[in-house]
Image (cartoon, rainbow, N blue to C red; front, side):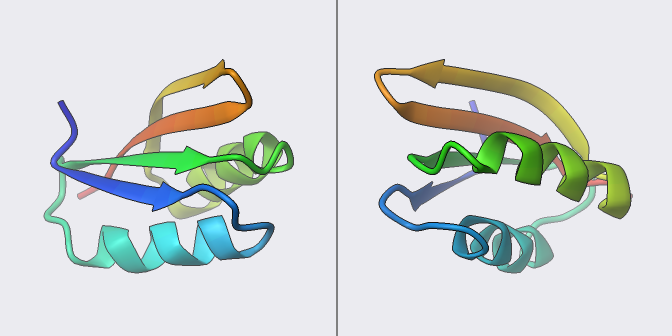
Length: 75
């Protein structure tokens, strides 16, 4: 179970990433953020985001056009 959930469905790049970045700032290191998105481009975006920020992409799924990401905040 994620510590926080961000519903970014209906938003297109770069809004899901920007909202996730803002939400992660409010979390402590080791906490998790679950993001829901309908933007197919978010798959590559969140992989790159985690690589560049040092946060861990724990899980990534797609079901019925909804992409779900679980990110663990570093530090």
